[in-house]
Image (cartoon, chains in turn yellow, orange):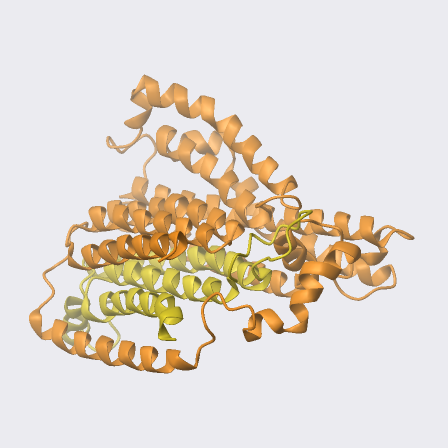
Length: 122
Length: 333
């Protein structure tokens, strides 16, 4: 019975690797890479809900009766492009942080903040 | 074990191995390239799960644009990560194991994978999208008809998010050029790639074909995988390639900055005007039935094509402008 759940477990494993990178690593670029892995795993989860046995891609053609559900595809297709736009925003913040602090390591950033008062660098 | 399960397991295995390696690598250039590999393998997995449109987008975005953006940021910052202290690793592992265990426990309530009677498949909307859409809209690719017609409001919302993120990047990177003010003609590291004749000739040869392919993807989206989002990204990829080889200034001569910036709001404006036109013609906002009086199917076709075009314009504008602003930041240092 649980054999048909294996795909979800594999997706959860990928998700957790991404989450691990986000929380354990201090480097901000690495955190964004981890977030990307997490994001792709969520996409896979959505697409797996739409898949149906012996289905084909939801492009209607004579002689094919079983199609996978198109709605998850639509949601994820737009989410991928939104995802790269928000990643670009994160990267732009990373660049500005590096120019202000000269580092991308979270611990160092906190130290600088603590040394120069709560507001960060001038 | 069927072929499908075997391929699934193999691809997931490659994905997991790649993700673990990314986590262990301290060299961020290598980690970025492996992230591109991760995207490519996940695109194969999307194809396996019948999501061809999604795979197309993931391949274009994950392997193309986002890798270039990460590499551009690494060139601006530091490409080596500090050692993660052990004291940070163990709490993270515990948290991840707990969260993963909870997800696996909760997954027992999820519908079976590939089941034909899952809530997704038996919902009435499935029949509307897959059967009735053929009479209402007449577009074979149901992903396109859902994206551009049934859920056009949703797509407009997504486009506004992309617009906002793009504008935010431009605001963050366009202001205060940083410590070293930009001087014209400076930067010995720039324009190195254009010195290689092979790269110069090949990239110039490829550019028209990439742009032509983008238009093919845009106009063919009704009949096969493709549409405005993919076309916009591919269109931008052409200029990113040109910018990588000939430098930002070279690319600006082909596509001036004001033009790229103007494309960002232009697509959204076109989209909203299209929606309002539907209202003026007696329908609701983003209702395309009345665009061609007397022939609702032709109206839907026209509406979908215009929606895809406006999506493509905004997405291409955002991607090109974002790439330019990261790349010219390098020239400023």
